[in-house]
Image (tube, rainbow, N blue to C red; front, side, top):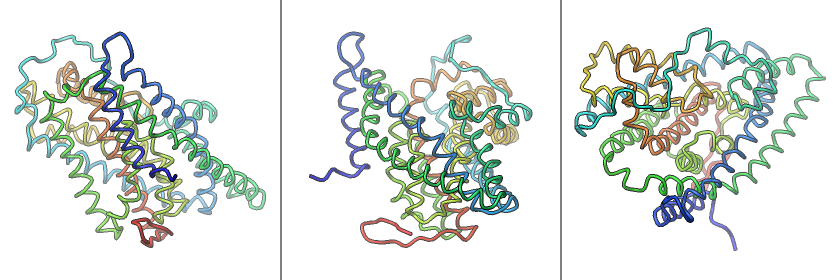
Length: 415
């Protein structure tokens, strides 16, 4: 008997997780849906286990095949230019949605968090010096052990250029790392078979802990935020693809499993290996995928960018603190810069928001308004970031003349 495809199995895991969490809430005794959270933890640990070697092997091979430092520099500049362009668009969308829908005013929150409320987040201001020193690894082994993707990318760039520069001897290393990447993709296949169970555990734990009722008081806020995410996915990203000449609907069909997986686990990392495979099938160049996608997970988290302006302005509205157009533009530019330096920081979005709030004299206690539903909001922003990075990879492949797509039957795409 043939099993359903991975997308269907992940969806079934979500439905079953909701049911288990609802019927077995966390009461402090006996079995509850929170007990299944171990499945989610195991799955995410398995993902972290394979990301470092996978990024290193694919990126080094890709860079070595680029040929020279000039080519790497050209593609790198194009990639960073697109990332900042996408960041500005996502920040602007967040501001537009929160200013038009006014969730902080419409919800009319009367019981605001008391001064001194512990939100478990400290404001963190990233200086340029801290940012630069953070991305340069002191040890490649340490970067691998801590899954510091950006540091792994930096080392891989140096290593890949060196491999490509030594000629015949370098070809031996390229062949070995190419074999390693194929082994890691095979391991990825084994890990992804566990994905539906990881999704089941994550959803069951959320519903068992918070219940479906937690959504009641925040329906308007959630609808506003997810409406902004959907606008970004189906209007902004679609427009970018239309201009560049990428079949966007076909791309969404190809990456749908990766998007659903990131949504259900609230982790964009969870679908990283799957996104690589999807973009390969879609027709993106392997060397472009291996270069752009890892960078995107540090520099191009569109969902998180949208959330930062949305959440900051929402808290200002809730506390009846007016923000002028000039202040909102300043806030947007501040977030555009500071958000690039917090890769690997736990609850990174909230950390950056806290730092930005201090600049505009907004009470950090306001973050408590979002903590209860942050997991739900994180599901949306993680899925959006996956879609954004997929589009970014396709755009760079198109600009480099290395994008080949041929639609076939059953809504699949092949090279």
